[in-house]
Length: 174
Image (cartoon, rainbow, N blue to C red):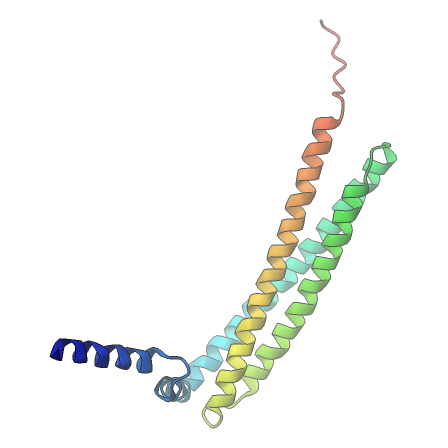
């Protein structure tokens, strides 16, 4: 009987300590934010700088890829092959890139808002904005995944076209 009471007590204690909505857990998070405020701001500024470089590089690559996709799709049409699937994927690609840009702007605004919060005097606001920023950063990652998926589909269409195009071998020896 004593063992079962101890087990119930232990389970209850684990639920209270591990529950993210518990006052204890929230107080511990708040205390940690206040204690580590300076380091948190330093880390966030470094993260923002790294993310900006990554976003800039990705934006450039996306622009280069868009030019290549456009040129290839046009060549397919000029060679009298059905290019509708390529046009559809090109449209999806442009849309996905625009969604990526919009998601990044929202994330960047949120991380700037987070950095501006005085986490020593407003740790609750900091934690709320931190959660929002994490969600927005995940959304940016989801958009990158979406762009990559569309590019994979485009490549599959290219391979399929290559397999359907007659060989241009005009070798002289038989």
